[in-house]
Image (cartoon, rainbow, N blue to C red; front, top):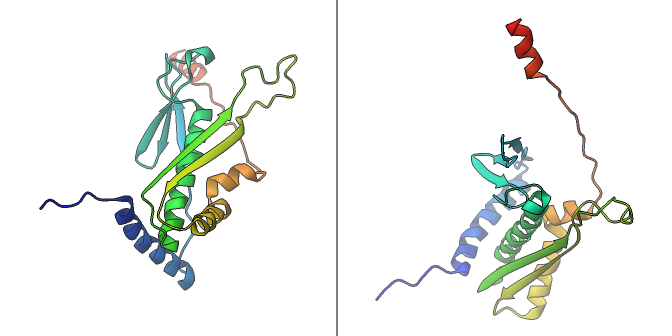
Length: 188
């Protein structure tokens, strides 16, 4: 007799243990905030953006219609992917916490970005991704009321969803150097 393949519900049982452990740390007052960091560098010749987060790398590029080489998803596309990933993850966390069985879970995210934004005749068109929407496809034996409660919990607790919905203050600075001038100065 062969072993049955692992299912999403097997993962949810494992996830529930992690959720309960995290909640215990919160209840005990030992949980701490996590600093998040990412760095991005532009590659010569191609302009590809190499995104580094912890020990991971993602390459971002633009389609040829936006002066790219189509070597990876664009930043707006990545943003939609990040939203979809976060919504999916929070559905899994909440399903594990609420012990709602899931046979499958898929999230589709869509949006619009218009290259004409801000140009004459399109001054009111946003320069950012807009008309963002997501659809969750859930296969579950749970009653609809449980799925509705799950959805409400996700809407309330999904960090990226709520980041996009809430106004933010983002601090910015530019640190300027001129390595060419430094090289020329040293050569003189």
